Length: 393
Image (spheres, helix red, strand yellow):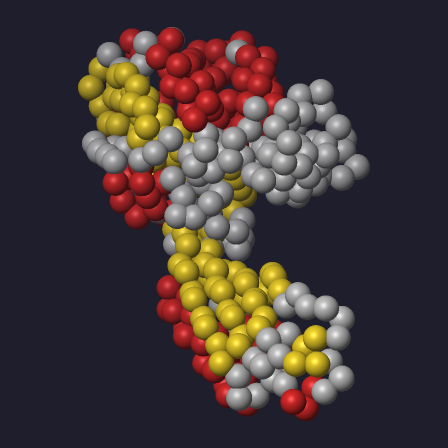
């Protein structure tokens, strides 16, 4: 462990350089060709066996230890978001309208740094480390499911992953056994009214008025039809019915998201939304079209592996607090890996204690304390080595 920690300390500045380079050249989901090539070349220079174009732009690298043992997979995502960066940093994005606003550049730098240190310890490794560099986490259907279908988990015994969290203080590791992140679905509703002159509303079926009524009714699904001890979100996030000032809209388009932590709640809400749409439109004698698209499933951590990583994290230098967290309603396609292989996903605090404000993920001014890269690498590395030793015994 001391060799691991000292090795990571020694290359911390390199991890920061990698993170800042990737931050300057972000690429959107399913378009990350240059980033994927950078990652693959980095591993190739270390002498790792590398698979490129896994499930699309994914990269899988293999480090074979000198001794027999289990196969441990470590995952990092590397896509960016369609956001114009406003953060005042010297390594600001050079691609207009695209930025790393969720820390995926940090995830990649963490895993590459850890790969380099573990490579220097391969004579002592009892097993194989599989580095999963995943594309397209931000945009469903995501990259995880395609990489799995392309064999990225073949032979893997356990998988560990982390997300850098700017809303949590530096030095904190948060974990949870069971459901950690929500299923993330979306819906589209088109209300078919009958437009007309704004001065003669009685001759129309006003799709805007119907849409407004529908939005209010949809809020009753969670507040009045879902168990208060269950967690769910129904949010209408877009309402479009563009017309001149004196024209009542013929149609209105509503789009939104649904987040749930239980599969039965997910199914109920999908059906309840349509019942609500139908009842509302029938009341106004309007038509509708409704599409519900299931996104990532609930991310469910395995109890044994979660407890294991939590115990390991308590022994890692620089980690000041290891605590169980409540679930969050954000989605994460790491959930697919856990449907196939036992493992866990945890949060690494990346909030700078000296900042007046930590901007949330997906914000144009998002940034993080880069010392969190070292914390994440140490916990992932320690978990890998401890798991191999435990299996060997």
